[in-house]
Picture 1: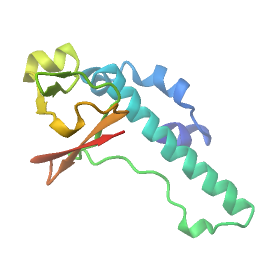
Picture 2 (picture 1 turned 180 degrees about the horizontal axis):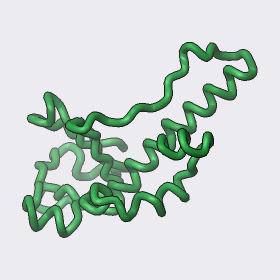
Picture 3 (picture 1 turned 90 degrees about the vertical axis):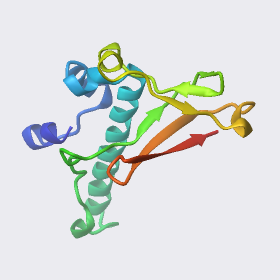
Length: 140
């Protein structure tokens, strides 16, 4: 989206960006649901950026305060947003592509007993301390 903005000077919608990104090697390492959630987060960030520009043009906001969403550092980590959770034997597997799973193996996270009967919308896995630790957040 950022490259499209510099090249074309406009906004690349999620639907169009999806077709550009689905052949990306990083996209293919993730399971489809998770990769699409990341694209949606990027889309929301850019929509917000363009709405701030529109507000600045209407003199409701100052241009100096507007910053374009930035690239993640090459060694950076992005939260995983898992929209569908399958709990089995009090653990849930982090969904991943077959290629990633064959290379690194499965990742299982213990599921808290207090959430077993709850209907969860999504789980976010947030990297902390340069991804040495991870925090899981369940959203109802």
